[in-house]
Structures are given as C-alpha cells and as structure tokens.
Image (cartoon, rainbow, N blue to C red; front, side, top):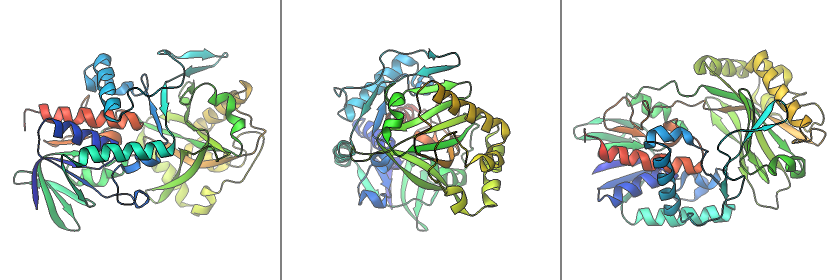
Length: 398
C-alpha cells in the first residue's frame, strides 16, 4: 500500500489542476484514476467529452466567495488557463456583458466569452497537461470503491483492498461520487436546487443560427427558465443515473449537420422533485421515455403527457412558454425538424462542499468540481480543483 500526504481521486481537469498545485508546492501526491474506456487508458476524465468550451467570467461566479472575491477568482482563472496553455488563446462571444441584457419585453440574455476548441485540440490539451502532472506525482490506474478513515488519514480501497493512504484526500471524481462520499461520512448539502427540462436536437444547425449568433455560451432567461449548453454543431448521448438515462450534448466537428441545446427550469425541494421524476419513469419502459421521434411545429407536442407526469403542470407551463418565446423572438425555428430528448436534469447529483469552501463535513476530506456544487463547466472544474488544493494546503488541521 502506498502512503502520501495528499491523495487526489479523479484524473479529470479538476483532479489534474489540484495535483499540479500540490506538486508545485513540493508535496508528496498520489492521483488515483480509473480511465474511461473511450480514453484508452489516459487521464483527463470527461474533459475530452464535455463540450470543448471553456467559459470565462461571468460564468462560474458562484466560485467567487470560495476564491476570496471576484478579483481573486479572476486571478485563479488566469492561473488555470496558463496551466492549460490557453492564456493567449482567442475567446469568442459577447464582451464585457456582466449584467443581463433585455431581449424583447420578457426575456434577457446573459452572455459569456468562451474559448471554444475542436475535439482534436481538447485531445492535445489533455495529453499536454496529463504529461506535465504525471511527471511530478505518482499515478495509480484504479477505481476507488470505498474511502474510509485510517490510522494516518484516508484509506482508499479498490476491489476490497486498501491501495493508498493519504493524510488529506481531495475527491475530484465528478457527480457520480455521491455513494462513495456518503459512505465516507460526508454529509450532502442542499445546494442550488434542481433544474428540470428537455434537450432539443435540430437536424440542421441552421435552425439554431440566430441563437448561436448570440454567442457560443449565451443564455436566454425568463424568470426561473433558461437555455442551457448550446452545441452547434453537436451530437446527443445518454448517460446513466439511478436506473434512468439522461440526454447529454457535446460539441462535434463541422461534419456534423445537427445542433442541440437544453431548456431548464430551476425549482427547490431537490429530493422531492427528483423522487417524483424517478417514480414517473419507473412506470414506463425506458424505450418509451428515451424515444425522440422527429417532429415539427409547436414545441413538446409529443412529450406533454410524460413531461407533466414527471415535472408537474407548473414546470411544464414554464418550459412551454419559454420555448414559444424563443420562437417569437426568432431565436429558434420550431417549424424545422427537431427531436425532444427527455428527461434533462441538472444539479440532480449530491453535492458535499460546506459553505463557501471545498471542505466536507469530514476532516481532511475535500471535494472539487461537480461534487462540490459551486459551479459547472470545464474551466470551472479546473478552477475548483485549483482552489480545493489551496484550501487543503492552508488547512490548519493538516
């Protein structure tokens, strides 16, 4: 069994930035990561498959209190961009829109600058930073199935046996680590609530050109409802969560003709709302709710009944009104062929960061990225890992 000062679990962008901060501070670091099958044994986690967009401030402002203010967050963001060799990379999008801009009588737009890479550029980026980090720390290719307090810190178990003990553990394993962290004694936090909606895929990305022209990461907002994660060009994949599957969207290369984006409404009462969705979907075969036939015309016409069963009439009312307004504003052409993918959920996973920190309820156990719950996105995952490592270095209990 290996021993170290700092154990980093997860080799995505958050884990790599955390390990880099610790290594540069001269610490003894072990990073444990089970590579995704698609990554062919390499580090990087979902970075290669998460949309290829690095959204700049004001995206991720939820990390400002954790960083020590907006100025400190800007400085950390620049550190992460430099680590990724993106500091001099040109950004696209609307400039200096720190406040929401009105669109029409009801809607507003929140625009971000983004560094948008091709899938090939992301592949090269991951290879560069993985090599940089891997040269200065120890890396174990293993899946962690249990984390428990040990004589000198935290013991990580793989296939029933302890493989490494770290005085401090930083979990950077993404949103699916809830079971592992709960079993380690970390208490889930309330977080931001939950977002409920649909992902809409258009056969021709021209149908979303007006929305894309607002910027690669521009968000349209009406009350609690917003657009989410525009991928143009883009493709759809489904990932598993608690016996159901959720539609995700990723950026594709220019050979892909289609595009997709999400519409989400935020509500409180996360556990109750999620329970309702899961109960509704257990009553139908997966193929029924995963079905996404091609339609034209009024939005959600083929999904209204199942939407209302899972989300409730109020949420569906918000989604329909929002979609209709997008059409009235000329941002989406609903007469074009499209498919409705359901259920789209966001912030549905457990989050464990206590207050404005990356600490959990357990001593010397930190979380970063989606498991922390402060902000989402590729760049924000890297910033979160960077900040979590700094907090771990500064923790008086070490």
